[in-house]
Amino acid sequence: MLLNGIHIENSYAEAFDMKATRLIVTADTPAWARHAGMAATGFATSVIACGCEAGIERELAPEETPDGRPGVSLLFFATGRSVLGKQVETRVGQCILTCPGTACFSGVPRGVKEDLIPLGRKLRYFGDGQQMSKLLGGRRYWRIPVMDGEFLCEESSWSVPAVGGGNLLILADARMAALEAAEAAADAMRSVPNVVLPFPGGVVRSGSKVGAKYKGMPASTNDAYCPTLRGLPRSRLPAEVESVLEIVIDGLTAADVAAATTAGLKCLIERGRGSGIWGVTAGNYGGKLGRHHFHLHELLP
Amino acid sequence: MSVLSFRLKGPLTGRIDASPLLPHRLAELSLPEIAALPLRLGRGHIAVGDLFDLSGSPGDTIELEGDGRLDFVGAGLAGGTIRVAGPVGHRAGTGMSGGSLLVDGSAGQAAGASMRGGELIVRGDAGSELGGALPGERAGMTGGRILVHGACGDRAGTRMRRGLIAVGGDAGAYGALHMTAGSLVIGGRPGAFIGHGMRNGTILFRGEIDPLPGFADCGLNRLPFLSLLDNYLSGLHGVPPACRGLTGRARRWLGDRGFGGRGELLACL
Figure (cartoon, rainbow over the protein chains, first blue to last red):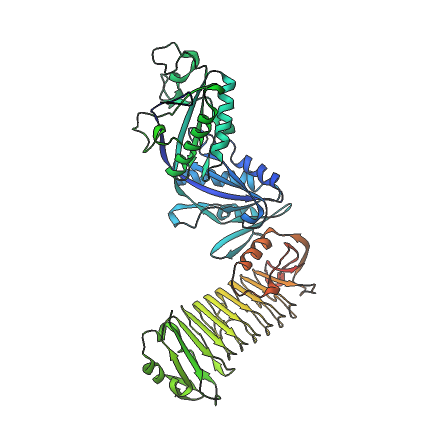
């Protein structure tokens, strides 16, 4: 299919069931909330080696947060509840508890015991007996004395079902054209609620395929989309394409991932062939690994 | 929503135990059956129908004409709403576990004592032992919230271990005596010996005080938790205005250290 000169391949992104949670982090200024959010969601690009995928969903105005201070909303995704709990606990303990002036709250509705993600429930022990708790409106908060005052932290958050691994591949004439297109598409996709783009700047250049010729490598480079290997029989790239970039989408529901995909497609199609974009496709594993399939032709704006 | 109204036929000749008048206990009865229910009057009994004119239909709401000699109003309330036009006597809402008791007047002694859940709102003043412990009970209030717009008497929140008491006016002496946990918010000035023997929990009030010697002065602090509490109070119905508008900055005392306690007194600015 050719739209505004851009090839939209009849392909689909294959995404997986995951577990996610949302945290609201507030601080005295938007900048310090951002510092905490950046650190807590750092080194969280792919579950392959980071343990979880995470990102800043959006910035929050003071009137949107529980304690009336500026904040950020963070989304964390992992393959299961227990690994998600471990990741969130470590990250909140090392990156939010430590950041000046911050407070941390759950950003999801109260769930059942089996979905519990401990926050203050474990971090309170840092208070060495001087911590205090408050139960307000059915939610328990811990107040832990720290050197700049108190770290206020909700006792727990909850995991919710989520979808991770939605993606778009941008095929372009040149590296800069691919990069500019990816930046614009990532900006458009970030405006969709309930999603994060976990890679640096939302963009990934090292798309992977399942397996490798080497033992012990669960994934390896997606050689069919590497322009330097364009001449090989298994290459999927036409001669004009010199650079491919991918945007990975994690969302709380399949509908959120679909909405972000549509927002990305809309942005890319509007930029048109003149901007150097040759085409758009999506990555999948033959449809057998992931339950969620996002067909590009069905998600066109 | 069905409302059942009780209007007093005349002046009371003695103290009445009004505890049987709970919405969930009356909901299944007909008006004649309710009129025949006995209420304790002094050492004897009187039928509901001889005391009150009944109107409306039994359901989840009761409207009661108040009187300072009606005791135990809403005691043991587990659900539904009781609205009282006028004052109530002693022990209103004791042992409540749910529902709402709204008193458009003052309350006598021990209102909301040993409360476990639900909401008690008193538009006037409350007597002593507000939200305290019933005689023989180890713990006082263990849940729910008590919102008093006026002042309260001595020993509010005795042995409290969970929940919220907010008093718009001044509080009497020995507030939060032997408190285990929970929050006592005083919009006015606290009385003498506030927090004596407290183990944990929070007492908030306005202005400076000279606390008991068992409290360690931790000076002025900015506490994000106060903004959270203020937001929570703003979202509640019926909170006395004097208890709102916490700035997030407070002078903090820790104690009662004479009892190994680490509760806090917060003088909010």
